[in-house]
Image (cartoon, rainbow, N blue to C red):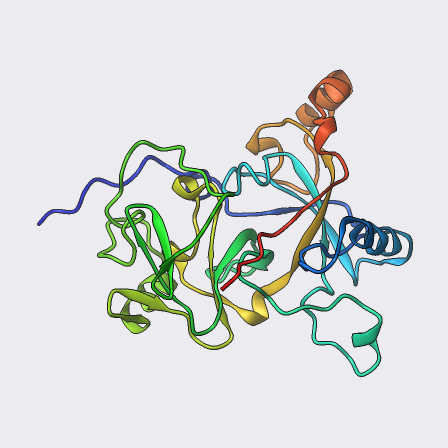
Length: 273
């Protein structure tokens, strides 16, 4: 049986797969269900005041794979301590946490670690993942995904019914995952690895295409949008702004800045399972 034709080109496949690093700036963690907004802001402000690039880093989103949670042109501060191994004393002073289902993570792309991605954790070690008719099932139960968007009317036999026979664009890591980690039509997440998807589910280069995220590739979690500017992908793929981008900023800074997104905390979606 011939496979269906491949889906329409997705931004992260047709564009260089990179979460562009911006000038280093400081910040914190957000995603613990027990913590309220006041405590989140308290930690954020403390890191802003005392943090260094060792603790956090600034990045800009150049592609739309995490829409509408994160938009092209969102400038993020990423907490690099969030998932670091806690020390004997620092565990009581700093907001360390385990990587959880529903967390948004920043990591080095397994296919080429010089590139940085941002995705959402769908599966942790031991989880069984499958997608049927665009619905994600984890350990046999359909999960609630209020953050997920489908913006493509085209149904793809691999992307939307996963795992399945690949029809295009699957990296060696993705093929290795399909060959060694599928049981009873489910992908089983191995130890020290995570299964991650983009929220813009039809336009995301993610674990379906390149496999698991190794634990050691995870840099941290995005905490806050410190600035959001409406600019096209091609202007955001370099850490050095082009003359075109500088001119656009000069003319349109106030009208193209998304003021409502400025200083927005980035929340994960804690899973109940």
